[in-house]
Length: 141
Image (cartoon, rainbow, N blue to C red; front, top):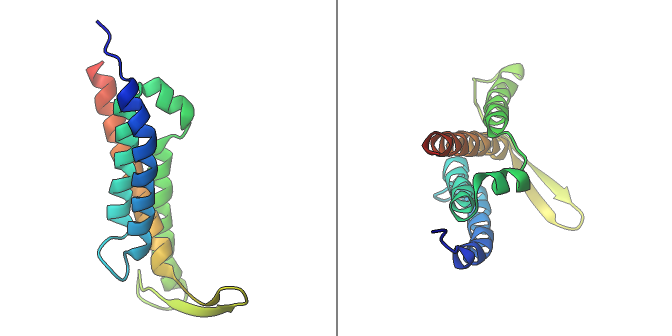
């Protein structure tokens, strides 16, 4: 007997939006408060897991045609590049720096290499976790 999952699928569409908003908040608050790329990446990956539970794998793969192994590799490359960027300027590996810019509409904005590093960590975590979940789910079926 096939189970009707209309309620789960309807709620998932709303909950995924809330989870994505939380992931973005955790990502950007990370270098000053608890959170960051790792936690934001885990929360973002949990939204993909919820979608995989509510819908079948083919539907999610059709809706999000991304190879998550490449996402993990891109994230790892970003982390290494941010680390090597400091070496190019004569600093220690993974030394972080920031600059304050005066943007006309927004005012003073602090841009930091920590945010780029955290983006790499987040992409790596999302890529690895979703790849593991997809591998496990393909083995079960």
